[in-house]
Structure formats: structure tokens, C-alpha cells
Image (tube, rainbow, N blue to C red; front, top):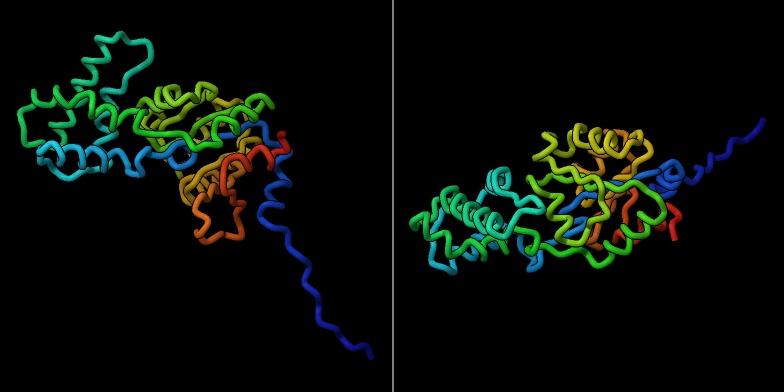
Length: 254
């Protein structure tokens, strides 16, 4: 008679080890924008900054809604190459539409005096890149990886990227322009089409579990969760990184 001994469980690979197993096939990297590449300069979103400005100017209005940004930029984002006069008119018209949209208790013409200040709060100067972004993206570009930005954002995201010094992204997909928002697979499929790679050869990096990790994975991408908050609870099923400079390391890029 043989005595049975308890089975010893085999060690399971970590999420990072599982990810490393498929990264050898990765030929392109897509990044989320807000919270991944860029953040608000003063720690507040654009809506909060606009509301604080209006209050400081004694201009009561309706409450802010996130949809305001989509409505404004659908009409007034400023494409590159426009003249100074056209930019001035665009900024003025955006301010007037903002006054209408928020029902600011002032004559519409009063918006003209606030146009430049409001554009500073709504445009790319309201944002700043995380410190490791330029070096990280530069390493990937020089290593030959295809690059894209895939973000739930308003019209004109490519102009924001250029203004912030991210000219190296040949493909910038904003949900408002593509007609699909993460976690829906449509925007990821369009990214794969533009990058000219099958989804399994694209690594997507973003800071939200639902939109970036679950959405990207469901679309067939390899996904990594950017978790800058060191106190956030880790998901053992997902590879997490604390900053973007870990991406080249994962891909073996030096």
C-alpha cells in the first residue's frame, strides 16, 4: 500500500511574466492621453478651471458638464497653419459659444474680453507632459516601434499633441473624431488599421482598467495598466507599471 502525499502546487507566472511572453511579437505601442501622457498643470480639470475663472470674474453660470468640451471642440478646435486673425476669431467664437452653452449671466459680447484667458484654460497650455514621456516615446521611436495615441477626447487631439511637443505620434485617434470611445473595440480596431499591425502585435498602455486594459484586451491588444498611484490596489491578473519609462524595459529597449 502506498501512502498518498499532498500535491505541491506549481508556482504560477506573474502577470508581468505572462505579458513578457507575448511582448516579443509587439511591433507598435499605443498610449492613452489624459492621465497617461499628460496631466492638468494646476491639478484640476479644464472644467473646474473654467468654473473657478467665471466665479472669480463675477460671472454666474449653469453647472459644468463634461459634454461641454465635446460640443465646443466639435466646432472650434484650431487646425494647424491657420493665420493669426483666424486663430483670434476662433478663440472669440469659442468663448461666445461657451457663454451660450453655460448660460453665463452676461451679454454674449462680453465673452470677447475673456476669450484668450478661457483658451488658456481649455487649450493645450492647460496641460503638461509627465516627466518621463519624451524620453520614453523617443526610445520607442528610435527602436522602430509604430506609435499611436488612442484616447477618449474631443476634436483636435492631434493639435494638442503637437502643441505639447509630441510630434512623433503619426497616428492620433480621438473618440470624437473616430466615432468610437474606449472600451468599445471600434477605436482600437481603427488604431490597428492605421498602424498597419494586427492587434496582437500592439501594446496598449493606459491608466484606466475599464477603458484601457479591459477594452484593449478585448480588442486583442496586449495591455499594460499604468498605475501612478502607489497606494492603489494591484490586480494580480494585470501587468502594472508605475511610470511610462517601464515600457521600454518591458520591450527590451535600451
